[in-house]
Each structure stands twice: as structure tokens, then as C-alpha cells.
Length: 150
Image (tube, rainbow, N blue to C red; front, side, top):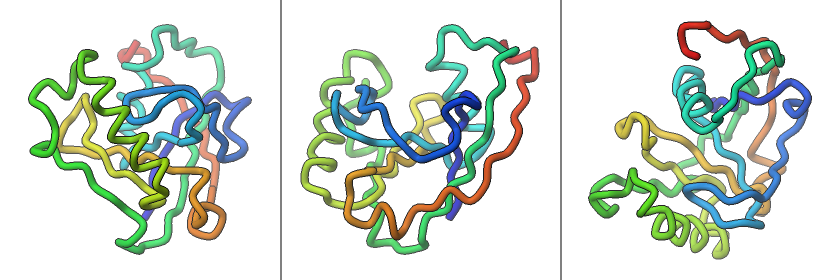
């Protein structure tokens, strides 16, 4: 399977995590957020970055993940509270992700996108024992911004 991450060129050379908190993880947990497509990754970036500077070069990181169902835990929408897409639900979702991360349950957490709920993002646990063997950055592609998005 391939997943995608769009990042500023200066940070797109390797698969690392800052440990910053987000919707599905708490501060200090080393995860990488990826999208199931380039287009979903673009929308996620536009929504989450309040100040995208189109003149700053971005890259698409194409990440290969071994095709093994045992590597993925999927969170389904019907398992979540009705307001899961709101900021009010962040702590609940972070607790779900933190539990998954702390227990090293699987390498990947497949989560619905809050932007397009029937499409999926993949959260990669960089501290999981399978990370180095099952995840590979296979190429870095040039990325351009369509001004109509901004």
C-alpha cells in the first residue's frame, strides 16, 4: 500500500516525527500522519496549516507500507461519538490514539478524515517494532500549489 505526506521540502527527506500533539495522538508520541491519496493529503494540509506560503517549496513523500492486515487497526465512524469531527472531541480521540500508541497494538491506525469522513488517513507509529522493516520512503515528488486552493 502507498500513503502520502506533503511537507515543506526542508523536512521531506526522512520519516521522522516532532512528537507534537494532534487529533489522534498526545504530545511526545512519535507518529506520522499520512493520507490515503495525494488529494486528501492536500486538503488535510490546507485545513491544518493556517499560513501556507506557496513560494516555499513542498514535496510529496510517497511511503510504501507492507500489505499485511495485521499491521492496521481501523477506527470506524460508528465507534466514535457523534461530534468526533469537532474540537470538543479532541481529548477523546487523543485518548484512543494514545492507547493504541502506548500498547504498540499495530504499526498503523487507520482513521476517518474529519474533512472527508469516508476517506482515510493513516497514523504511523514510528516507535513500533515493525516500523523500520515495514515502512519505506520510496520517493519524493515535486509538489505545486494550485492558487485556487489558497
